[in-house]
Image (cartoon, rainbow, N blue to C red; front, side):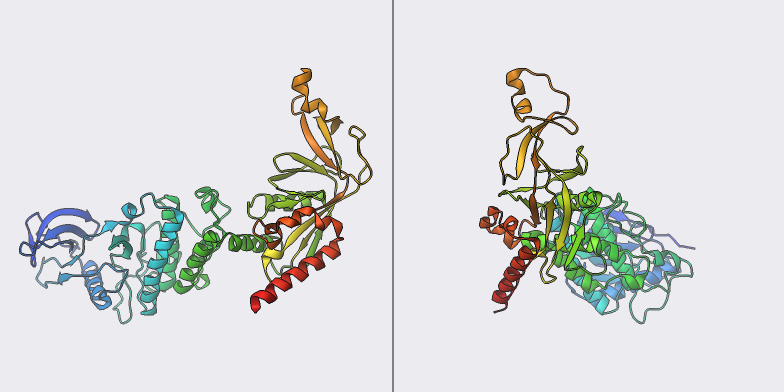
Length: 480
């Protein structure tokens, strides 16, 4: 049974500190602002009010841990303390006055939040190296001091030679960030991977602004996926990291040092467009070839071709398309076309073609050289637009699905005041040729001379050899 007496009041004295006002409190302790009347120094004082056996033991452990950690960067330090033994006496310790993490991150973007969590993770890596587990990582227990985020509230800390306190089947930790093993057998659970779990969930809370967190492991393709909250932001490597850190099996989670390295890598990727595109190509290949990326893969099924091209169309860094007739455009969407066997490519205007095959080519050394090649099957012109031998396409009007007419019908409908069926549109229908797709930061796309449609002047095999020579040549230059 907890004992409660001598409630702290404004003006009350704790050591040399005089209480001014209460600023926070929980089930076991209150936090007050206090001042030293002589030096006028101001501190925050945490005063235990639940004097039961377990809270007293945890408070003693907290003070011991903070004293042993000293001035470790990233920890709110202990400045003064007292642990009186008399019945009803209240243990306390003083610390610097700090800012809440919510206030610290107000209006912060994802990059700033992750950068701060790198620093926080570095501190946690040091703690874990000393076999200290915080076990209560949540937004409320992160405070900002001297321009950086710090860990506070070590009331549930676990460290070597600590006498066990947690009763059997008692859960330990914060409700919305607690690792599953801490709900079942907290006393026996390893607190280090539990910290990794809570660290990742806390990062997610700040990135999304959703204070209640999410249940279970992280799933990028669910309602808790970061893309739902950070549209347009590259998040894939963060998605994978959050998933790894929130696995049910503690052994499957990465160690804290690895977590920090992977957060640093994400910060590099978002500032380096070429590196981001390389990652996106690698992720594209991983999605379709989870075991191993082949040197070449070929699809002839029209629905499969549409699905794959839509995958790259959804990623701005992967979707630059070169036409067989010269020039290039960004592909946005691919659909089945009304004309049998045809697909339509949307690039700001509509291109129709009959796909023969789609090939993925990789040189397995650097994803920025990987590409897709789409071969259009030869088709007869419709007769609505004059074409000559060697022409690649015809301009047309599509009045109803699959019903074509001369391009002037749509282009000059306002001049002729002709009423057309709803959905009438202008299209370009390709009669033959090959299209290639590269990432926007690929060497091929960065070379403006490649808009001459050189890929069309080569067979698929010749173009593959051409790209391989260039990839190896650049690799050799960089190696020297």
